Length: 259
Ligand code: DAK
Image (tube, rainbow, N blue to C red; front, side, top):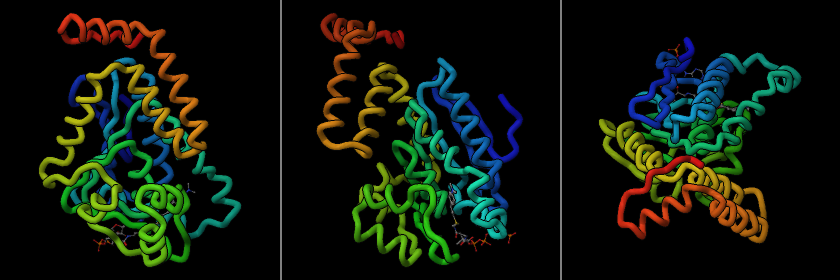
């Protein structure tokens, strides 16, 4: 593995690639270098045939308290444009393997947006989500206004983005932002367990399900149904479809080949 400076990576179980944000002294603020490393690690996991699912987490106090304010504060519009940070966020969006976020403590601003870029979210009881950019004179820039609204609805998204208030893990769960709230001692393990469950499924089906669900955010119902249908037919060209159905009929566990 690479020598990272802002993250740690590991493979704690077969098939599971884990990324840990590792700038605890600044509550894992997302510096440019942190974003570069997150994307690079995700791309490595995506390329690896052995990895089926990615988990990303921070520490108990913070998943990430946002983009690095100290790094951004002096920048002008043109410099922000030159940095082309959106390209990195686009790469995360394009990762085809499932990404599970394990969130504890602060998930604010870019940290909340990074969490919302994950496909599923497990949170500790201490997690707090928010878009506090309004408090520093700006606004969400990496999808917060769009993803939060789609996840929890207009009025709640407006309140969070316009007041900068944080919501607790329980509120986030009730609003449909996250999958599960668990004790702080086990949030990473729970995310790894969920990742392991998915890692045991037919990989091609996993990939096409992720693609199809995400498509629903960027197309009409007709367009989404069309992609779903094509992906469904496509899976009948795979060996794993034959294997999965034969295993069911023969009452045995399927042996996936990713083919
Ligand atoms: N950036 C830099 N440093 C941060 C930070 C941040 N976002 N958040 C915390 N820190 C640092 C603090 O400065 C402090 O450092 P020292 O003073 O010890 O050197 C250390 O982390 C501990 O923080 P506190 O002492 O403040 O800890 P508390 O427990 O008292 O307070 C807090 C925790 C989370 C309430 C507080 O730290 C806070 O309000 N932090 C800022 C939260 C925030 O405003 N987040 C939004 C940032 S704007 C883009 C993509 C995304 C974005 C922009 C562009 N593109 C693709 C172009 C995103 C923008 C944002 O996220």
